[in-house]
Every structure is written in structure tokens, then in C-alpha cells.
Image (cartoon, rainbow over all chains, first blue to last red; front, side, top):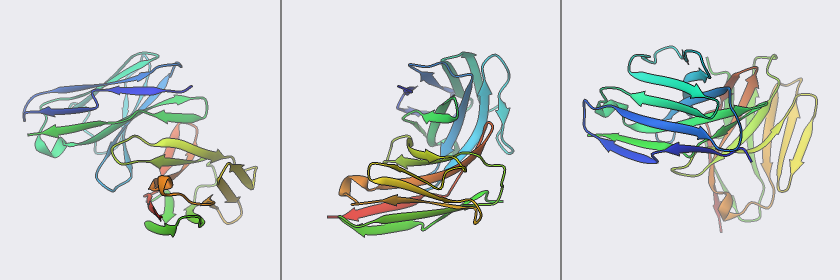
Length: 113
Length: 110
């Protein structure tokens, strides 16, 4: 149990376009989901905490107008990178909280050309 | 301020040996301490976790040792195998907040 999926697993887009990443908890309901960004050989950097039915809480330094997060249901949260630029290229990972633990998705590799 | 300090940054161990990764924290309000294993290009996966009222927890070849007074905890991997080669992250949590260590890249040599 406690499976989290992400889609797509990788995406290449042109600079200036928007990209949406989906995060789903497949076998449990999650009132809280987290979005992370990870650079090569570095730790996880929390971008925002998403609660179902309310606005996401963004970490300091994360542009909420650029990284739009929607947690429309207890099993789905989406991250939209708007007007993507090459510096947004990264590995994006979501997680869903169940009880005391958070379970991670497999990640999405975003490359902006 | 780094809430959780993790060491070493990288570790090379012979097959069959013991891998030890250490973490330290400052905030005594943390009440949950998980360890995650991450393979390249994949998301982290929960390996084992402990609460501060327990000094040790063992699951198969993986053991967490917890020292509440020293505010330190460590992961021991017994009989390390090449398949254990991955990056390991410790974390400390309270309520809805998780703070991650900087990660340890483990390489197990056959």
C-alpha cells in the first residue's frame, strides 16, 4: 500500500511554455501533499505544501505565480510550471502524507530548452 | 539553518561490511525520524523510521540507533550488498513538517 504516482515521468518543453505535472495517491486519500525540487546530487528542497481544498503554502523564495499548485481532490495534486525557462529544468518530486509518514512519487524530470 | 546534519557525504563499503550513516538534529520538538533510500532517477522510498521513545529499531539488515540525549540517530546497514548502493537521506519531523539531511551516497563494492 501507499503508492504515489506522477505523470509524466519526463517532459521536454520549449522556453515560455507551461507544463503540468500530476501527482496521485493510488491507494489512499491524502489531505496533504508536498512538492519538492531536487538538483543533481543534492537533497530535497521543499517547494510547497498542498492541502486539499485550500491554497498551497509556499516556501520562502518559491514564486507562487510561477509554480501553480492545485489540490483538487484527496488523491490528486498538480504542479504547473508557468512560462518555463531553462533554469526551471530540474527533477520534481511529489509526496503524499498518510498518517505520520509521507510517500514519494517516482519524480518528473523537466527539461526546458 | 540546517535543521538536520548528515554525515558522511559519501561512503564506500565492501560487500558484506557494515554501512553507518549519522544524523544530528537540534530541535527537541521533532518526534519522528525516518530514513529514505533513493536510486538515481527515482523518488525516495521510506526505508525505516523511529520515534524518540525507542532507542533502536531493526528491520532486516537495517537498524536505526537513536540517542535522544545526544540528539543523534544513525542508520546501520548490516551485510551491505551492491544493491544497497544508493543515496540515503535522514529526516526529522514534527506535525506536518519534514526536514531532510543532505544525503549520503553509498557505494558497495563487490
